[in-house]
Image (cartoon, rainbow, N blue to C red):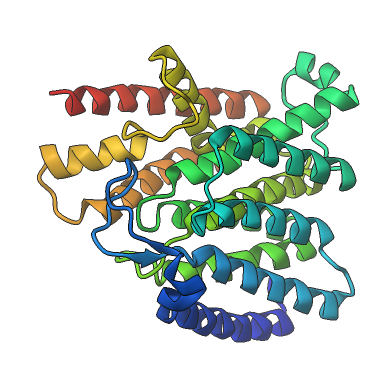
Length: 352
């Protein structure tokens, strides 16, 4: 249960978060002489019709850094890993937000370099996978670093891929963080619960200005930032709750992970570059089905709701069997199967 101090802190922090995000949204057109305005209405993932500031990442980073400062003053603990990884990934995405052109290959190399640096310097580890043969390989430090690196890469790029509809990534982040928060609160892990609660408050404040009608976008900086936080939260939650199956966490992250994996396989099989965007991602096909087949207006934010409600529906049974490795493993592969079947069904509609 939240103490009176924690409750008072989050009431004040919620007000700070709301008004900070409000001010950033209000004056977003003036940031960097308007270079953060998204005016590209013809890119594959564009569904807006007027220029909107990609300043959500700025708001979230500022508020998270402010929280880290408060956390240090309260607990005398500096969250150096959260701070460093958030900052580095934010700035990598920010280069694209301010229209500094970097080729996809160079961006990938930069991301790899930054993540390997952070993994090594902060000793970020995953020692169990739920698969015996993989657990043996994870005893090798080089393989373990590569495994953790892939986890970051898949989730961060998955977050960037699904970002594009009002509220889609933000709501997804909130669901994941809420699940982790419930687990940590039930096991009395107060410090990580405090951190997760702050992130929820910050992203909720952003969501108020992004959903259902967007006044600001996350931008690449915001999606990279949220993706990196999701991975850190997952690893820290598992380390504090080792009775939960590793496949439970894989199931929680399956949408972001599988979106990248499936997209890579799909594009390479069609002899397309897996690093270039297209209009055949799951959420885009669902949007097309809603707007063109079902003739539903406001399909943008309805798509976000349907994707996340479906994800939540799949997640609820998994949550209750989080300590059962066999059921968690089965549910992870079931979720992937459901995604694949629905994807091809939507794809067939798009070609009619």
